[in-house]
Length: 108
Image (cartoon, rainbow, N blue to C red; front, top):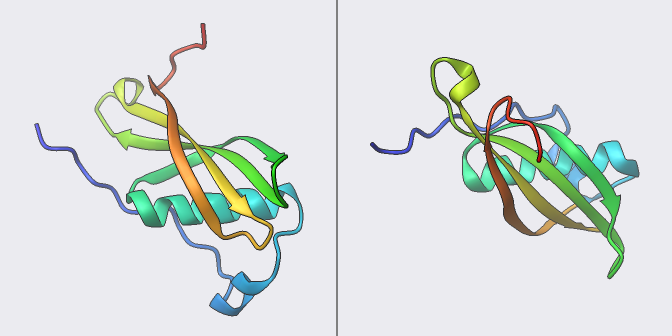
């Protein structure tokens, strides 16, 4: 079966000019990570499960939860967690999928 592509998450109302400003705080980092990841992979973001300052450079590491395969019933949908790394200005440097799971599955 072909993978179903979904629309990216809703964009913030910030203008392109505001992207040049450095990220201020965890909330700003989370918003930038969700927006950047959705643009790249084309899947809807579901939320953020972790935000932390990067240790190696000025910037952020954000764990973003993404709906990869929507199914009916919703409890059988496949989600994934991506680790997204941002620089100090909020630009996406890299990302990687670190976990894939069924909605509602508890961590072991």
